[in-house]
Length: 302
Image (tube, rainbow, N blue to C red):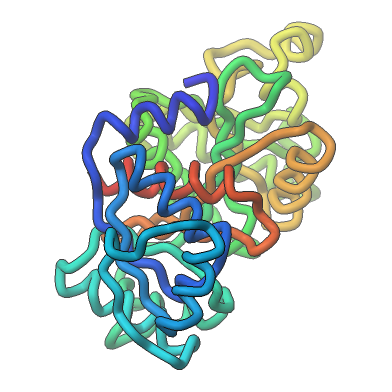
């Protein structure tokens, strides 16, 4: 895949999934759900205060007769209602609307009523799929939003989550680049380089499957063939990564925002690691990002 347009086209071929929106009175989210409905890949379930939702819908000329409405005047309670619907099989995808991220994630992670049992081996992670003008295909970045300083074992799970997302957009054998400040292992002083080397070996020994993992890479030689050749770095991943595994959240978050604001990149973003896809976007994200994120969540549900 080369663009988010390709991602949207793929979603339209898969049929509609039921998308429940927690706090649906958010203009860009409601516009994205409406566009998804018109393109045939989303059926919206709107949870929130009916009058507020109606005001937003009216401003966008959206006919709410096309939607199921679940009234809830307390915005903070909307995520729990949406999660319960997912657990009951009444919806397929969860999307964040005009509700705080903390309350949204709290409902997902609730030990008894949430989507993820904290005692299990599952791990939530954030995956962003970027369309970058200067890159020859879509590029995935993880984890820019959830895991602060992942351990080696957590990085394995973060890779597995990203690979699942890659498979959902028909990247069958994604190339995973474990990036660090340098492309050589520096024992003791640069733990990220050590983790990258171990992850590469785990992949070769079959402990991480359905992808190609290599590293450590500097970011340049992970995504640029000439940079890789100049430094005599060879392999299938060098200069041609599908997934960038960042060493910790600071690196990933700075890279995420740098691509958006300096590289004119647009992205789709989801949270993986639960039984159902979670569409988690920022209030500052444009409608195009929210629509592409919705499409990605729908593809993960198929």
